[in-house]
Image 1 (cartoon, one colour):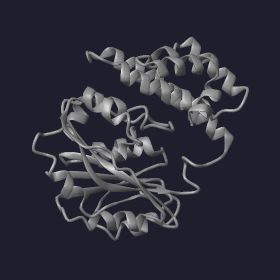
Image 2 (cartoon, helix red, strand yellow; image 1 turned 45 degrees about the vertical axis):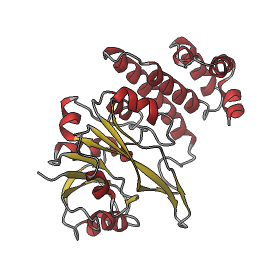
Image 3 (tube, one colour; image 1 turned 180 degrees about the horizontal axis):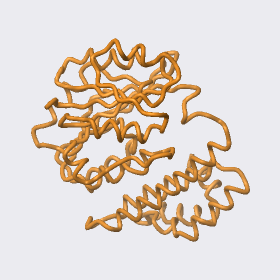
Image 4 (cartoon, one colour; image 1 turned 180 degrees about the vertical axis):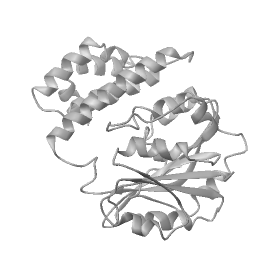
Length: 306
């Protein structure tokens, strides 16, 4: 059994996939397998992939969620590592992860660097910790810059499968609909300070497209993910769910503020109907004021707090 299964969905990334795969095969730690899921790519990406010692899974174009799910189904490694095909990892990432395995964690968090196509970078140096419960870890990670992105974590495959986790097919923001639960349900979570993941800021990526129809779909998917997360956390025996619920509520409020009228007004009504504002923390004076402001005008509040 390999130590790590690195899962890479591929769709129209011939410009980036070589750098991505080179970063994996240049790792100083060699105990890993690479699973490339061909999500019906229409360019020459797979011609490049075939030059590497990887397990290839072919599927019709079903999106990132199903590609990751199929990758997990075929994984044999002790830990799952999700890597987007236009991103790349530092050569010592797996080596640094190895140093954090002594307490058999369900999750190991590593840190992120943003890189644009002109090689400008921005690092996020988050505070590390070790041996936290999922609840304790979520309270800390929720303050990080990146929280729900699947590519921030190495996840123990046995734990992932036991909990029957999966990404929801056909949605955008699928990470938001899953990873918060993966974190908070874990028994042991470590976070290392090593900045091992390079997140490429592409001008034409799915997360930066300006098409308003896509913006509406993003908001709709995000809202449905929120409802799912709240329903799932309510089923658990976790003693303190307040930070989790507040994180989810704040995230969905921010997302609907990207909408224009009349969609914005429609979702504002949904927020009130589903009592989303009631899930915001009010343990300090500033948070109490913030919740009141959000109820009056989410957009105005978002502009104010920025």
